[in-house]
Length: 303
Image (cartoon, rainbow, N blue to C red; front, side, top):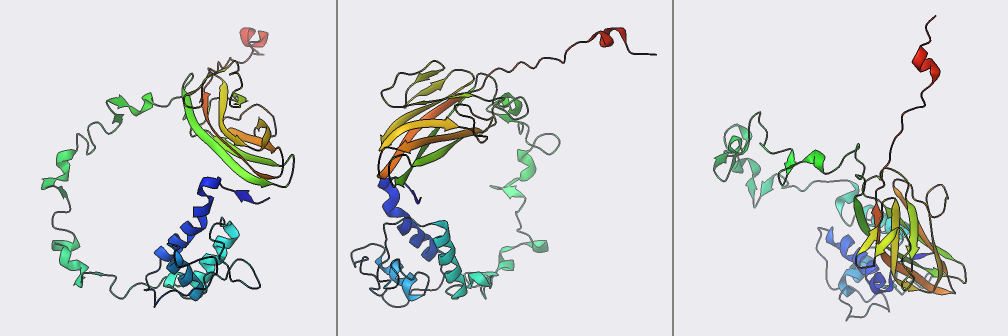
């Protein structure tokens, strides 16, 4: 099933690829781009860029064998991008394939780079900032006096327990995706990835707009909240969706891993189906108990 971006931005994705590809080209565009494609009129702001890609063999068209259309509103797949970049290099449109350097790569405005340097092949004031020696900015031991602090706080105050989210701390984010369904029951999914590892698994909740907020969750789409040990996903927008769910990488439903999991949705019918929302996740307090105490530990096991 071909993956789609949201309708509001889908029309710009193929244009964006055109802009990126043409932006890296150092050779000037020769003449006026041809009217190669029937769906790219002169009024299209990317008309010349798209025509240049066709004239140089980077794009061939989207409707073989005629190939008289560019399909400017379609998304670009990774395999199509690979074809664009390969043709850009192998057609020698630029020197990307051989990494040839410019003849004057060591000059600036016609001057050799050494003209900008001082004695010994380095800038005369390379150890200064605004006329001050760099050591003026350092503290004892050749490091900034407060290099281990942020706003007066030691860096260890921000994350504890070996790089995991501290207990009772909440992190928030956004989630959303969409695809085209062939009928009822097609699925789409999107990851909820925690930027910092949680100290344990969380109970996951997916809350549709208008549904009551369950125990373990609080707030709303604009201000999502979660109690310790819970992930709460608030759906703000949905289209053509019958139901939602959540699972982690090993297939267990309604539970995250310490790194997150996947929100999934089933289509209610054929056509576009998509959703968007926000989420909050709050780290639980994990109490690690010592191993069981045995009589051998108390009496010893000596011979």
